[in-house]
Image 1 (cartoon, rainbow, N blue to C red):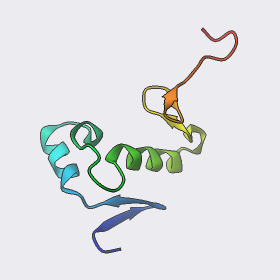
Image 2: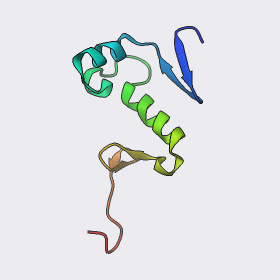
Image 3: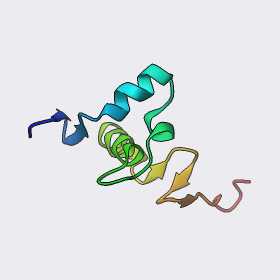
Image 4: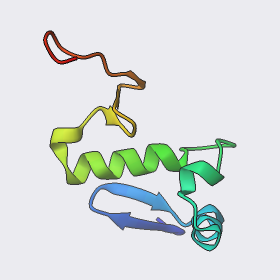
Length: 76
C-alpha cells in the first residue's frame, strides 16, 4: 500500500490534489476532476459512509445513489 494512507477500510490516495485543495482552501472534490482512478468526491463519500453508516448511499446535497432525493409521501 505504498503511497496510500488507510483510515479504517477506506483508502485515501496520497494525491497532490489534497495539498492543492488545502492551499486553495477549497474542498478537494471542487478542485480535482476525474482523470484516472477514484475521484476525491467518491473517496470522501466512501469515508463518511464508513464512519456514519446511516448515511450510506446519501450523497452531499441530499442526493441518493447519485440522483436527487425525492421526498416521501407527505414530506414536501
